View 1 (tube, rainbow, N blue to C red):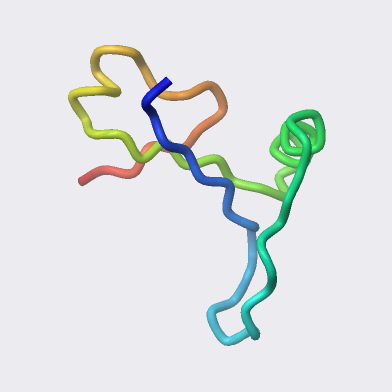
View 2 (view 1 turned 90 degrees about the vertical axis):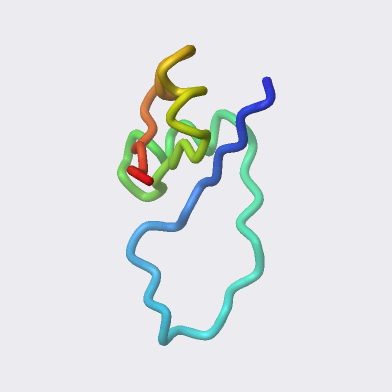
Length: 63
């Protein structure tokens, strides 16, 4: 799929020192998403989202 999605650590402050990337297996990522420890953001264009719908469990960002 051409869509790009990002997993963002919920609650991380900009004032905190940068952390290394969080590497998770697909099952770990899904469990973290359901536990509200991660946020899935669908960043495709509005046209792409209109054609295919938003990714399951994702939050859409309006442009």
